[in-house]
Image (cartoon, rainbow, N blue to C red; front, side):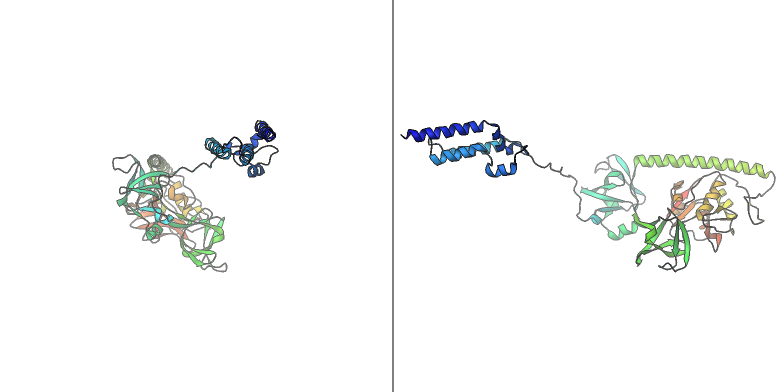
Length: 421
């Protein structure tokens, strides 16, 4: 036996074991979650000592010298595998699987449009016995989440639930386009609507900030859109409007309850104000059948408000036919614009309304065109009037005609009919 060689080998083993017990051994444990060490280049250490660190150096030496007859390299490799298996492995957190994948890939095919007489219920589950969460009105839209047993789960506004498939149409591009309203919202103080799509063209009408105009054509001319106003169709620069498509969405039970309560309060307040106004008018006239409405440049006299219903409002408004139109004005005798006229007529009955045709679309409560009654506010693109019966409105039309009658009431597309009383 070569004692000299054996002694040399034993010394190497003891040295290696000593090194393995030293702090340097921590360099060999990157797989256990260590990502950085102060003063140590971990990347370089990984290249030299992959899984088993210094123990691999020892195994290589013993294998080369065939000491004790053990395949140390194999054992070391198995130990390394065990270490890797037991070590906490760092992985990126996986996103939760969405259980409700869209029914179709294309976004436009995910749109459902209600096609019903009035509305369809949105339910918590795909069952007619399930709780009603809200209502999806005719021509309202929702985004399809999934289809289940003849039902569509949709998201419409703040309502998420199921509607029966027979009451909605999904993916019909022509229908989706039809039920959406393309609007241009005025972003400048005074927008000029021109006859043609250029700055040298005649100004048809002035529209104040915040008003919504219906877009008739977006591709008529670069930098211009064709819109609908009282004078007809004209052009506005896209520099002074914001374009958007407006849809109607489902109404939750809570929102419906709040809306109905608000409308009822407004009806009671309007009726009370009109009654008080009528009483004041009767006492102030004291035997006289007419009185001056306000300061006026004419010699005409106007009857004071009488009554507390829509017909009384219509009768009062009609006596100002022939008076002038003035942009931004609110005088029933010296000049008013369309919303100023409506505002001032109702102010005579003690009802406060905004001086904005767009804002008037949400006053009072909505009724259908088939149910229009005298006193109702008829809303158009950038314009409003008061319905007086017989398919006729009275309104402050434009500078050329002033306050006048127009029939039929739907001479332009009606956007909303709002009732105050």
